Picture 1 (cartoon, each protein chain N blue to C red):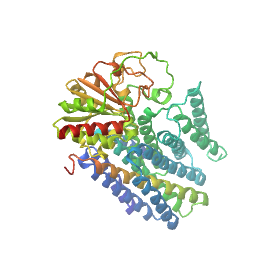
Picture 2 (cartoon, rainbow over the protein chains, first blue to last red):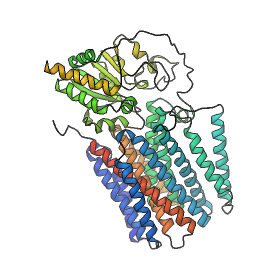
Picture 3 (cartoon, helix red, strand yellow):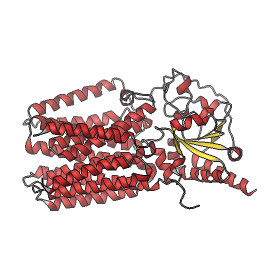
Picture 4 (tube, rainbow over the protein chains, first blue to last red):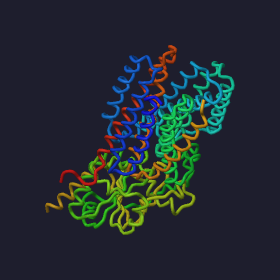
Length: 456
Length: 96
């Protein structure tokens, strides 16, 4: 056994430990260090292999990549984490597609190796464009509403079949490299078409799924290059992305196929009763006095909080209320935001202690005993229609039971419907107070009012 | 080509991955994703093998070079931002 093989085995072990340590916040940073060391060993081990003779370009490439990667990580604001993940995923997948392409043109391998290469290239190119599209949608360069047209699924399915057939022909006859550009082009095109019908709120599932594809592509590369370390690392990433997307689907009570092919939130076929129903609204002063008199407050953040960058003001509100002896906690719905765990990261960024961030299943039984549920920029995840109305597009989706609290406060710009285009009956309930305004400035005025009340 | 062994390794690693990821608290799902995303940049190994090989063609050199750059971008930014995120998870506020 040569030295690089020993280093590869150590790297694989470190990756596994890294995931194990990621399970809890207390050990998670150790997990990152372990994964970093693992990667370092893998790269050093590879550079030491005797077939590697050409160092200067590799070193230059490593330096260029680092020079792009560092600002990408450091300058990105935390609200842009989903976009960053998407773009980084695109880079990784692109790398593995290019490696597959290079291998193909160099060796024209046969049999199993060629099949693995085909899968690697297909997933790699597909994930590249799909991740770039996801980036565009998340960064709102592209419209985040789903774009659907008649027969879309048939077009996509047809394209995919053609890609698979061409892939099969290449596997059967690897020397026929005239077909290869078509195959690569179809994979790239399919990635674009796959994301077009997907709306912003489904991004958590899709990002996780693309993560899984990127991993599987690396895994297929492992088979093509007969490299066990690539297989292990790719499989770990593949299963992680897959499991997260299952969790996300479950949190919306929808299937994979529905998320990927449903074009959700586009067609507002749902009976839109547009007549103006009365709502009660409150000023910052009134809301502040109710909040300060409460014993327990549960804040329910949604994507709107990220858009308004309100997390820091919410932390101030948390501080002001906690100082007055109010018990403040945060209820986190699994699909709140644009990627799994998005809300937790934003609130952690704002210095909210993580033991105050409570998962849906743990907080729901307690919402009935809560004085105030304060909803900031969330809509569908608290819509009781999911429970009460079987004809609703979100029927059966688990929600945070905000409606059970004594008072519900909703900070919202106006009365527009949520992502799913569904009216929210929560707004019209007698115990609901609408707080109209921008989330950030409204919470700021709440903090000011509560502070003034302390001084008085 | 010993792909049967490869398939065994894949199967075991996938099951291990499932078990490990299931235990991760939803609190950490975002950093988890960016960490696994960074781990997937292990493709840098393949990229180095392609571009540094002694009988690499010009085409595979060029493709390999681009692949090393983009895998390294993924790798470096993935690890840095994961660490940056995890640094923020605190139990109590540092200053009162």
